[in-house]
Image 1: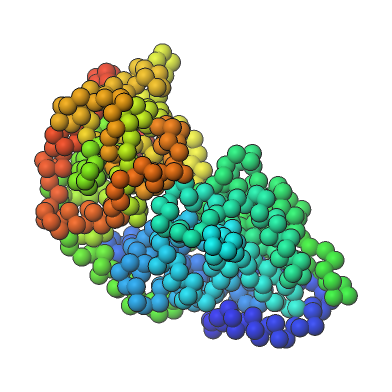
Image 2 (image 1 turned 180 degrees about the horizontal axis):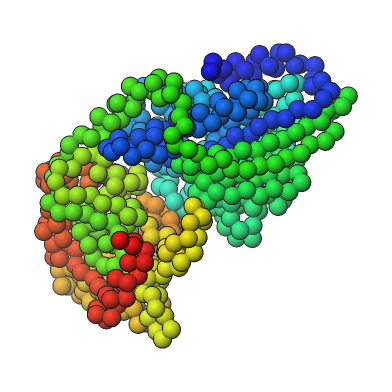
Length: 578
């Protein structure tokens, strides 16, 4: 199919329709994606396994354009497009001179607008500022305001002209960014709540543009609509926004459709598994819209239906990413299994903790398993394995904490992870057998998110599963056998995500105001995956005898060992059946 880049479409159609719409009925299709997370190609580079990707998204959008007419299709993405897969990483940080791959792919597909996600901000100023310069498609975030003049850092909206009708797309990013990301990543900005700001922007822009259709794309979860979830304000907006036809949500990776007579909420989930599909039909009389009908649904994506032309055009990019992905970096002397972290100390967590404790002046380390169920086989390591071991671009901070704050922090962390073993309780791990809100499939899963299950290294401690929350952690000493003192101050290594407030463990557990975390940070280090790479380059190998040295990591265990161990193994069998 011939490609029409967006600015050309807008110019041509606008010139042809300056006198407004003719009387009649008009139907537009709104096609949406969100949380693509770098899933640009259908291949994962190291196996024959394939997955839904932007190649499939292009096929579906082209199919609708061919059937309905390109001028009747609007394509919008709601953010988190620049992080997650090796291809995104490669064009964020390795090849920084070529035009970014996402910008080129999004232009090829013909998106009309892209909202900014929190993980897009996480890539840092050099990456998202580059996108602002390079991408011909508007990169929107009306609630990211400059601290120097109060104006939006990104464009607020774009208005399209189709058949003489004005279609306005307004974008917003997640207002909770400062609770997850280092201030250096969003320097010069502040993020405003979507409630009430979204309505204020809609009213102002609709009046200015005389919009006939308004689409709001928010990088915010659907939420519960209770006004209590700052990072997930979707249903809050759905129940309150006026003058909006479609609300595109994202962030929580949970597919959802909600429609009333006047507005539809669409959340397509993540990773190109679904495409949101909205329809709006307008009736025009005497040049004015006199009625409208909206509807929405989700289209499950068949990974085998791909845009072959797109695949061929971007094949050189795929080959460049693959070559980077399979680059040999060192040796691994024993298998690493990330799910072992849920039942106690393990080689995987020892490695992460050891990397952290190498960063002066760290004495103690907090870390959680960031890959839910990853496996790296002993032998030659390739760069792709580093993404399994550490999938995110978190920096490492070293933070001052008192002994009491450390103990309270661990109490909070383990309370998200385990139950108190008492009569009538059959599980140590906090698990439930319910449908997964992201896939709809019923299975055993954790009640809470395991990337917040922080354990500690540099300490010797027990976790008593028979005790209530707040009384489980028994800290015996530091790793070198010296006393652990509650009113003493220690230097604790943790991710920038955690130090900035991610998971709420610092705030609700340790009682630390993360808005003032800079007052406690004594050292900043680069991304943890880079620390891992540098370690392998220095040592040539990951040896569990070295990374599991108890004089460095200390030790911890669930007690009573026999009883807790048996039940946890049963819980693990439910979670990960053979």
